[in-house]
Image 1 (tube, rainbow, N blue to C red):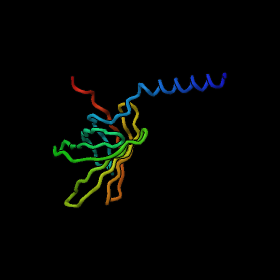
Image 2: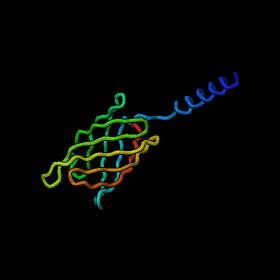
Image 3: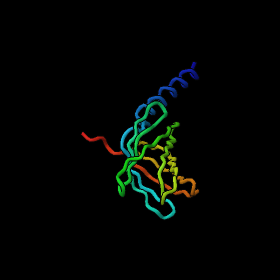
Image 4: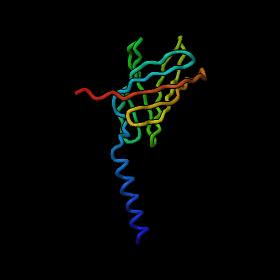
Length: 127
């Protein structure tokens, strides 16, 4: 009986500890990073439905929103979008770990086979 009580306590405690954690990616994120010496600064806005995310990412230099899609698995977040560089099509993939209102991880650029790193902070909703 004591084992049953102990298991019940652990279950309740672990449920409560996860209840306060926001694992949604929905919202606006400020992203900073670097790929092969090139600075990355952009804003991405996502909506999340289940484990799927979609939205747009906008770089300050061109201001044009680019459609992005991805998914969330536990605390792992991945999204990608298509772009171009000097007329060549690119697929840019971000993969990072979600810690509250922050993300950090890697950027992969194909077909150039180059990578870099990024950090992102979720903006507070405007009131």
